[in-house]
Image (cartoon, rainbow, N blue to C red; front, side, top):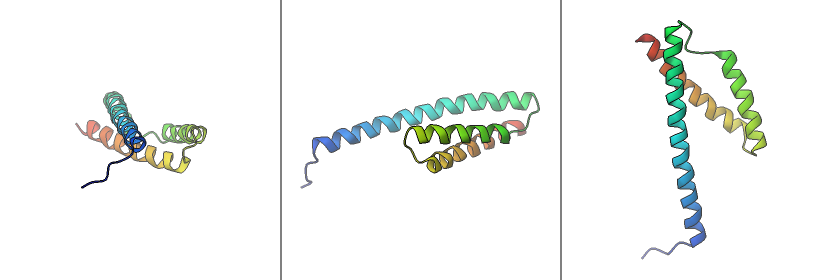
Length: 96
């Protein structure tokens, strides 16, 4: 028979589940916006990647992470992953 888990653990896990769901919905909204950016860039014949913008975003998110007491290295790795996916989408949009 499984041991009953403490209410505190169950409550913390429920909060984590809610946060995970919010993150997924936020990422979905972000990608909706970046898809529009990709279509606009393709229409204007702009390159899929914008290294200057990416550097600004990395610096901005590192500062936000520090203020939130989140490891800035982790924040940068996470953003780099998202940016790679966005660029991949922009390349696909530009290719038609």
